[in-house]
Image 1 (tube, helix red, strand yellow):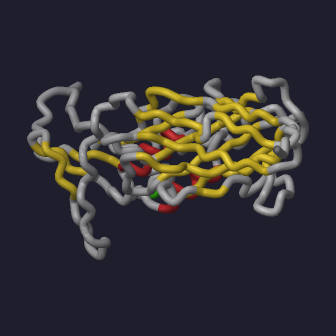
Image 2 (cartoon, rainbow, N blue to C red; image 1 turned 135 degrees about the vertical axis):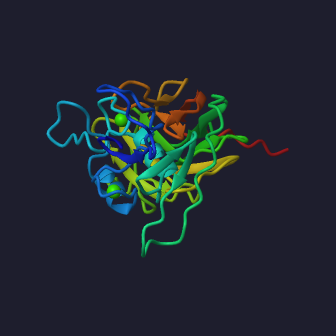
Length: 279
Ligand SMILES: [Ca+2]
Ligand SMILES: [Ca+2]
């Protein structure tokens, strides 16, 4: 029997033990059983959700949900949990084939997830529109979009930076917001983080799908910015953060599939009214 922190156990029966020390390949362990109760389910998601975004050194960091052991709980861990969702152990390894044991009174059998498509890194994340021009006081909506093509995606961490001197994130009626800051898109319906900080100029949005994935083009979420004051002619940038621990990423099967990104810019300028010449 092979076990590991936050993974389902594997069992390799009928192996003849011939010596005092013998290595037995019990196969790759499935990650996601954070609470070690033998199934990857909503309780594990709950632990992951609670510790989401926490990293080594912080009191709230929980290594039980740092499934890939990289010192942070983020979308890669969510993606592992999602990919293995509702799998339960121990998984018996026979002649290289994994056979799931069916205990009594278990829910209906769960099909093993399809093998992950090799990370093509062709998925891009963008702000749409990439640039917009608005008057001071006006509200402009900017969508965070993902173009995935044929690559399945089951989680996105989007971390954006903006200059709070020029922009603030507001709700539908124009009030600055910090929680439930963005309008969620329909494609990734499990939302772990949805917040904005109008003092530091940051947006953190994390969402995924449990036990399934999405392909093609989709809107992750929509931001409502209110323009506060006139910008230089080139506008004020809205950029994806790529630095730990706020690392923007698009994932599947615990691996990054992100290949490119498109930042945005917003031009805030007063309207100039041209004289109307009447002939
Ligand atoms: Ca569990
Ligand atoms: Ca991790």
